[in-house]
Image (cartoon, rainbow over all chains, first blue to last red):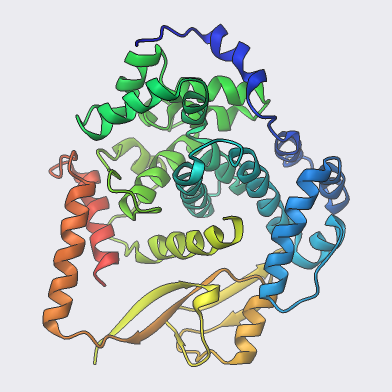
Length: 279
Length: 108
């Protein structure tokens, strides 16, 4: 059946999704604040006991691997693990925890994790905020999660058209839903109060030429997704790469005569490490 | 014998492995650990990597594959990449460059 969804339908439905951890928007809002500190981070996290428990669980898994004593509060975890690293853990754990409430999330989560790590590694090379890159990568396909949650039958039909008939994903979704996952994702992320750059990356990651020149996060997310698929992170028979935008290469100043093995190796090794840490 | 480089997550690193690339770890803009390429990992350096929250390292090892095995592995990688890039136009320079970069990484 073809749905003819309109933007107000999507916005009205968001309240029926599992609750999105507000700490993510709080943390991203603090990034531009020079006075942001360990105390602020700990205070944001400790507002939510469930989030606190999950973050301590991941932090302790990491500390056990390092042969160190476990911690019982976020402030001590920040002190031992470091501010930048614990922020990555908080952002990733919150999004992992959110997506774990959806059925069939295994591939979705691992793909998002690979794109998040890829975007973060690319961000290091072009001086883009790495936390924004991580979150944009982790949430770039959030529109597909919405589709699978509210309209699983149509979502499966769209997948079938892409995987069996080779139809472009946005075209199949627009035909079946009235909107593609990029548009749905942007509406959902906007409702959650995520920054404009992240909304742009979610909206334009399949059509980067329109926006990559003014928002490098769009370029990073587009390329990170292609790299994740090209490296089979994670493996799925249907993984594919169809087109790399020249504008994206220009914006990211990619030099193809350079050996890119270190970049690809770092993304793959970090993905394998993170997949054991975040499940 | 030829050497090959592999990128391994922290939990796969073992004492006796040789770093293929240097490791520089920083905290708050300060270098806290610097290991050069060629450094042979010891239990001490592994502990330093763990305590400094390293996630991975590039190790260099002897490539023990013979030419036949190397060829077979390359064919497998090429077949998989051909499947992944099945809808791509590889006469398009940027897409082709990405394909070549991934193939070079997978077959090094």
